[in-house]
Amino acid sequence: MVSPEQALAGRDVEMPVSERHLVLDAPLKESESGEFSARGLQQAIFALGCFWGAEKRFWELPGVYTTAVGYAGGYTENPTYQEVCSGQTGHAEVVWLVFDPQKITYEDLLQEFWEAHNPTQGMRQGNDRGTQYRSMILTYDKNQLAAAEQSREHYQSLLEAQGFPPITTQVQPAGPFFYAEDYHQQYLAKNPEGYCGLGGTGVCYN
Image (cartoon, rainbow, N blue to C red; front, side, top):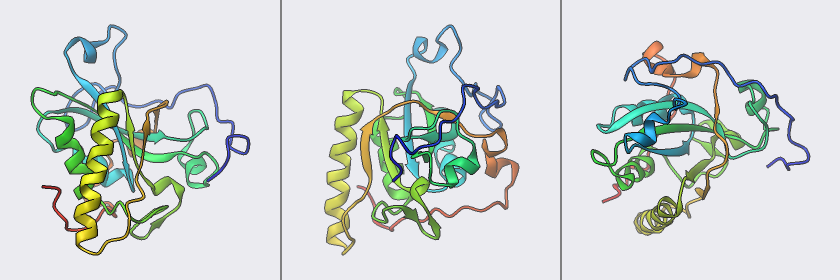
């Protein structure tokens, strides 16, 4: 991992993205009036490999209001895709999402996260290699942090029983989320035959 001192500086300008989700027709950003929180919606961030397929897994879940792909967990402000792929930003490819806790729980999202990828592979996911493909759960409050850590312990026990090595998933409070370039947003809706390298372990969470 690159150190904060060695990381690329980045830029002050945010990445421009579309206003609406291509599939869900929901906002891709929180409004100035705070629409998400006013409606009782909550946010979550997950990193589980290439964000194209990961985003699709989450936008298909009932109760997920909107999703976007971007970069988090590192140091560089508003990085480009090329900079993240260089390994010099510290960021992982992540999915940011907004969900309705009355329709889907955070624990439901954690189950999808664990089952959708192999969380034991360190700095890669399948054939995708690099620090940007590491497994992470970035939490917004102490309840999410506790639930994420508890779920990691639970899934670790299930994986151990099937002979898998230890989980390498990082669990930590969320820092800034930086949007990826617009062509990455809802990529598999724009490119139905596009690449998706996600592959789970086959071990059910429940």
